[in-house]
Amino acid sequence: MSRYDKAHKDPQGPGDQRPTALNIIHDNALEGALTGKVAVVTGVSSGLGVEVVRALATTGIRLFLTARDVTKAKQALGDQLQDTKVELIKMDQTSMQSVREAAKVILSRTNAVNILINNAGIMAVPELELTADGYEVQFATNHLSHFLLFQLLKRALLAATSHDFQSRVVMVSASAHRIYSTHPDNYHFQNGGYHPWVAYAQSKCGNIYMANEIDRRYGHLGLHGISLHPGIIATDVGRFLSDETKEAMKQDKMLRKVLKTPEQGAATTVYAAVDKGLEGKGGKYLVNCTEATRGPDDGQSSSETYVSHTYCPQKEAELWKDSLEMVGLEDDE
Image (tube, rainbow, N blue to C red; front, side):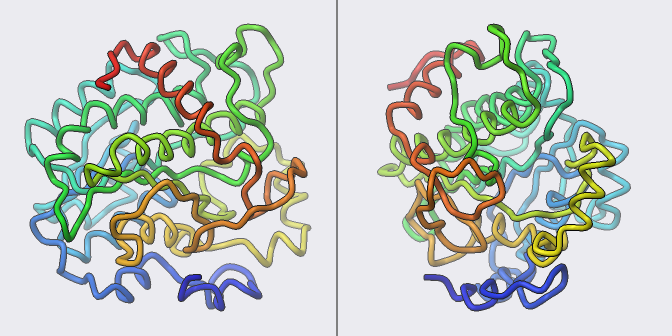
């Protein structure tokens, strides 16, 4: 149960009674309360990332932000970048080398990170695209780059954890993970079968598996992984959607009711990152600022429930092992 359950019972569209990211900060009495702590947020050039930053900035936390397009991020963040506690770093998530370089910059500024929010992502790329590293672009951007960033910042996350404020890794997944799990023999569609939504679903399932495995491996050390579905929000992540699909979504009355503003869409991310009720907890998939409930394996991409493959220790461990190999790292266990 969550204090926000009632607000989500009967949604009435963007701007309704559902909480915003700033509401989460206020309800946890965190204004100015996180001074001295550090957070890293990826994907801050538009949409949810911007709103996450705006909310976290009110806590006094030091922020390291990454974006592929730094110019666009500067325009989107505006006055936030005037704060001396906020630093913007270029990171192209289609390049593992770029991730390494960004992590190096962060670690040159701090040796402790309390919160890592892996927010950046792309959705439904129409045709199969491979990165320069040879990886399917959605898998690389949404999963592998975040996996590598975590590995590079892991010591800093472990160093920052304390009894009263344990470190958190927040993975922004999506309800689309329900339609397709990870497939080790075809991560990059080298055996064919590419479909925009299948590739997206696999990458988003990978986000959940990564969070679950982080909690399994490091939860007892005070480092926790949490994943979430932010909701349906009209942001730039939908730029690859066809005009026909966008028009059909506009005409869908039920969809219009559950649609959130970016401020509301960022709420579950901020909830996962700082809500006091989640202190010392992890391995959870959240929806609407609460833990998701089990639903049917119906192949529906927009349902707010989880399915049988959402939690799968065998596949989580398998993806972890394979991801280490893809980014060229050894297992530390």
